[in-house]
Image (cartoon, rainbow, N blue to C red):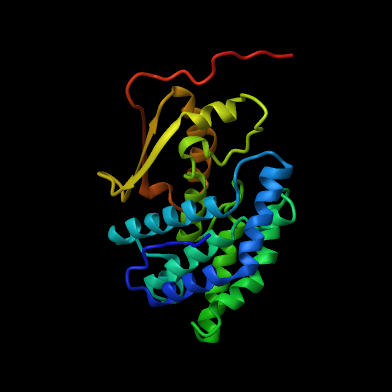
Length: 257
């Protein structure tokens, strides 16, 4: 699967994107991640489709912050360029779930292990040694801290964490759910119709979520709220959710056997 992103003249991001799309190793890790997630554990997608959606969301979040003059951490802390923050966010988004190729349990730590040599390959020749090392460290930080309970320490890591939670349209919620029958996870996931990102009125980012059923509140309260609260993005984001039109029925019948 080819990853398509609006690079907007960021030459390093363009080269990175070409290397990502040419990497058979990364494609294999994405495939194996879905074998673990969907084929063996019967939970939701953690492979290439999730990566494509989430990476585009993350890049948009970062650029909305940039439009509001919010400074990325690599700029504030290391005097790098805003374009380098885009490289960190895209790399971390593409690599954050590769640990599923080994196991879902502790997949964040496993992703760091698998991601490290891939980052070296992807960045080779793009940066001097110091800058490449900093980019690698910041990327691995974002990979590790996408775990719900680990607080990120950078703006870029917060972007990755929240973007991961926002892949929730049409039942694609990041809370795993068993495919065998209706649960509060699957029912609430099916209630999310559309997620829209735009500049906010009071804050730099507005997340507008359209639901077909009020059960969708469970996804927002148990995943998005927690990831947002435990991220560096909380001061910059406003979330609005509403039911569009008449509330739809999701479950016709439920029984406990």
